[in-house]
Image (cartoon, rainbow, N blue to C red; front, side, top):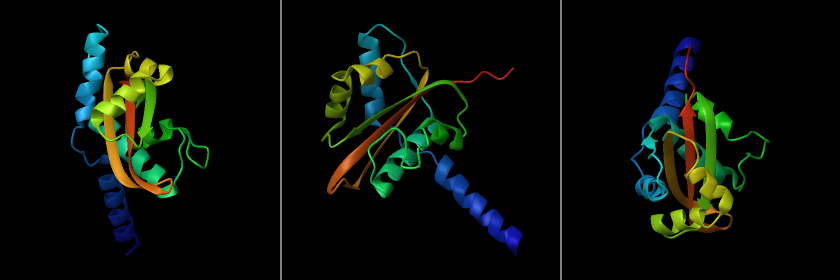
Length: 152
């Protein structure tokens, strides 16, 4: 009985963390920024997209605005939880923008976010989730960027 319950919980956790979500239009807009900057585009990665969705949902559920969660856990924990082993990683957050274009323009206009957009990463996953956040209905967008760890 306990083994059956554990199996069900493991299956549920696997579904929550590894179910691919649709590719975001924002991913192409980010690649357009990189093309304009003369650098290689980012490949879409389902694990990064899953970790970005988990982060966006966690931010909405626990109503916080920070790279670190309320328990002090850094964003890299979500990368690892999604099964993404990285050698380098980055995170961009956005909320309250009314379109993918506005979201990317917001990141472009912020030096730290722009640095991530054109950073030395190979892959990205972006997720936008609408919900009640910080007292109003809005969309929270999370971009997770990474370069995979090479296994020896």
